[in-house]
Image 1: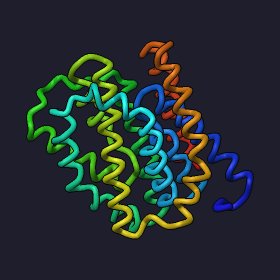
Image 2: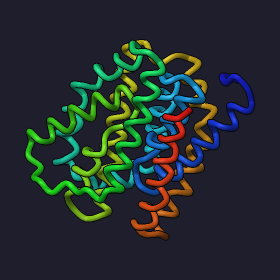
Image 3: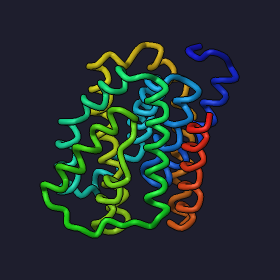
Length: 242
């Protein structure tokens, strides 16, 4: 087994199950919950690899439906800009001190939740140059932490109806994760052990995502904001104080 002990496996499996529920409900969030806690239970590099692999595989469950409703005029420029800066973030992840990266991952997740809890909304335009800036910053952050940033999510949410927004987020996150995996592979961050850990955790991520997707059809946004964002904050704070 690619984990130190069965107790560690039980702990990381529980984290991934919960994170999967958030991902299935909102279309994003697996990395926000799992990233900080897995960085404590594993190493930052192993945590990011696991998060990226689980994100793209669970995203595949949601992607088929999302593609038909995706706003490509928003997603394509963001993806191209992200691809240009993703290797920089991946290089930082494998090169910097593990403790520094663990705290960076937790701070990124906490900042994400705080922005959303604060009720901030992006109300500006969606010009090509703005997409380039937001995509570029998000690419670097994703490569280093396995997650994007709140501005990216809010930028996508600023257009269209709820179903199209959620579909665009699912597509955008999946495409960025594929780019991040490629960048980490190029920098030597992806190992057999890290991939084995992801395989052991995949069933829990799939079950959680399926359950979260069913919840999405039964509950409203206010329920998500109270529950999901609260979980992200707790996860980030726990990782910071550990």
